[in-house]
Image (cartoon, rainbow, N blue to C red; front, side):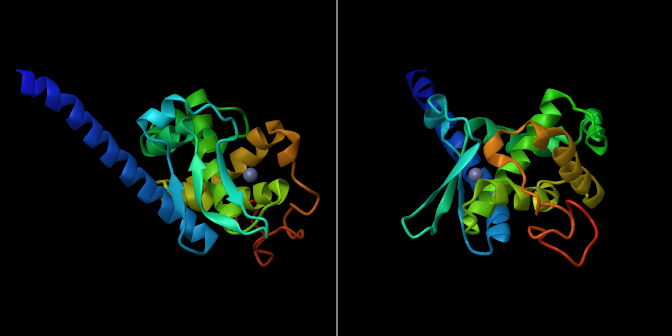
Length: 198
Ligand SMILES: [Zn+2]
């Protein structure tokens, strides 16, 4: 009996550690694709998660020369919502992303978490300015959504939904500049007439 009591917490710790590692690995692959170089996504472990109280969704450090670090640290809640994205998108209420009115809290959190991963990936790509990173992040949001399990049309809808519903509510640091339009100076694909995707 004593052994079983001692083993159970240990098994839980190992199981939790494996789960976190596989999530980090999956998210690192998505971030690397956007950053154009091998980078890491670090989700807080269970213990660090208990004291994680920052409020920006994630962060990337830049050195004195303006070079980004190789790792982004995401908040516990964002990691949790990214981990749940696959199940959230299968719910009937996820179809709400095809519209331009606010969705359920769970759906909005899934959309926001995907945006945060996209945004931090832009920092890892070397974009330091918040407004510029946000503009690029919205354009690469459909790619992130695809990698998290959304079919292409749904992924494009997620990006359009964020731009229409959530972007107007972000803090002023992340406000989009006048170049952040189709064909503008921050358009990542000027050949395409799609916006914000393509
Ligand atoms: Zn940022």
